[in-house]
View 1 (cartoon, rainbow, N blue to C red):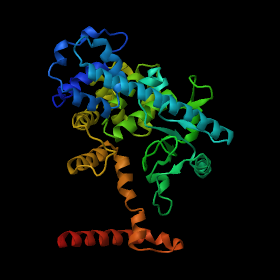
View 2 (view 1 turned 90 degrees about the horizontal axis):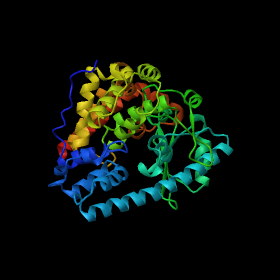
View 3 (view 1 turned 90 degrees about the vertical axis):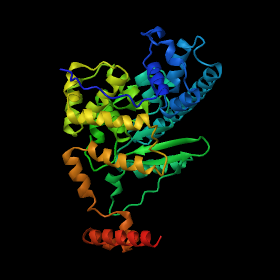
View 4 (view 1 turned 30 degrees about the horizontal axis):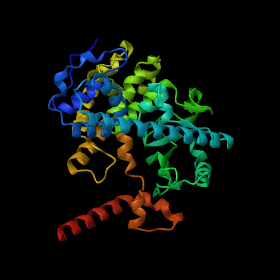
Length: 398
């Protein structure tokens, strides 16, 4: 049964509440459900910035037109119209590039699963123009990484992420490398994991067996099966604090589709994410009134899931942008604590143990020949203490 737990949404501004009301509109719900009074005393400049931050302006534009009737200033509608038009052009541009990349990799025998971007827009929204995407994310087997890097560099992409690593820790500490095409203005993220380690996740071969093929493209585009997509979207959104409503809208759209709920619960339990699945369902059901299938209710009736859902409101109500560094100290400390809370007990243990594994900073503190890098394991506690002592000394001098 459903618990009596209710999210405290009192921190939401009038502008944010209006944004949410507009997101909830669809073809089956008439605009009359929105009281015209909610449009009064709206700071429209802030409303536009919220829509941009949460990456939901395509949906907002279409639904604003349904309820405009002198409630919305003309210049606001014009701003959203331009944003919608630009996004449509951008998404079509990304779609074309996605097909070219898919064809290039297939011709070179590289299996590829597209994680987000235009393929997700068509799969969840049925229209490439209704979701925003800033880049193309794809997943490949890790053994193909060098081959893929060579292929895309030959296409004019420039490597943007230069990961510092020691003893191959990049394979599990990180999960993707970023490339940028200066001519096409396209960012490409090549993943070998869905999320950073050391937590476990499905292997590529497992995901490939359950893949789906997009029917919206002239060349075959493969992407995650429904249940694997749910696992990816909830872990990705949680890791980013659900700081953009677009990620919650994705969950809302996905759970409206035909899903194997038993398989979802099985996957979440296998990889120790049931509390995160519950968090996402609580947020979507209470913010967007999403309907949650009864088979998923055990995920919602969980104390940790409810706590995580309430904590996620900090990111939404404070317009937190985790991609803009340096983060304000308050945000950085909150996010660090929240990320740790997201981990299961086993994942917390693995995370803490990962600090015993050498970091690239150890090679800077005490440079050693590569053949001696194994010595960083016993030396790591000493090097950590040395860096901390030096840092404190510098702070005192300042």
